[in-house]
Amino acid sequence: MSQGNPKIWLVSSTSPQTQLFLDYLTQHLRCQVVNLAPQQLPGLACEKPALVLLDSNQVDKPQMLLWHEEALNEPLLTVAAFNLADEEQAADLLTSLHLQGIFYRQDDLTLICKGIGALLRGEWWLSRSLMARLIHFYRNQQISTYNQAAGLTQREAEVLSLLGSGASNLMIADTLNVSDHTVKTHLYNLFRKLEVHNRFQAVDWARSRGVPAAAIHSRKSGNG
Picture 1 (cartoon, rainbow, N blue to C red):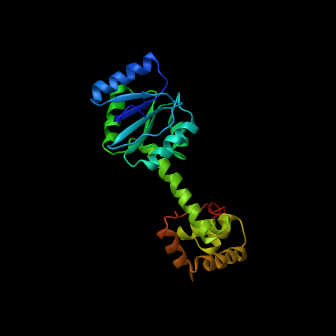
Picture 2 (spheres, helix red, strand yellow; picture 1 turned 120 degrees about the horizontal axis):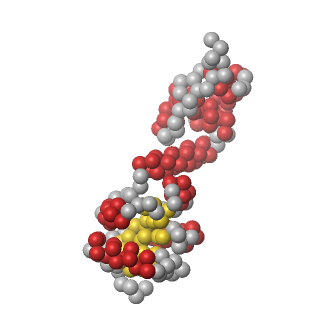
Picture 3 (cartoon, rainbow, N blue to C red; picture 1 turned 135 degrees about the horizontal axis):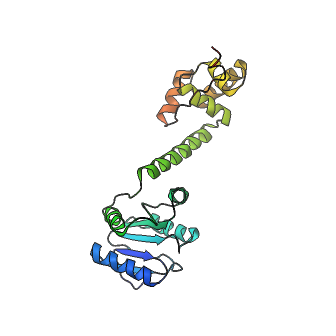
């Protein structure tokens, strides 16, 4: 591209509103900001830290994916999205795209400039609740990966999580609504697949891999 190496690329359609936003960022952040059309394909050579701001009103998810791939190849490139409707939309994007910053439609310009400054310093700009959702998503992915790697069935994975909560065989049977004999069969298969010899070693295996303990919901807990 012929634009050189600006510090911020604003990916959005050309309009008076976009130009006002661009001028505001240029004035308050004191760095060069260049507007790119949404249909322009990535191909930016970064010789210094740079930021791409994707307008979610103008850039669709497939186009965002191209920028996601660009960021994977350019370690100095940070990608963020703005004009998002709400946290649900943000969470959906973050499950498939590497975005370090999220800005919502209701964010004022002062807050956006503060967030951009943080991103240019190599920090993340996500709300605490959004970060918590992201961590939960990746933890579940990690657990699923470990379960698949160990060859666990869904039921065996549930038994493993209940073991981590300290549940006895009877409590596991009650929670899963199965017989005590069935629990013993699951435990036998579980120990064999994890290559452990008892429930304590199985719990250690789970904890070392970040598998959370499951809550016990006993059907008999209210009957005395």
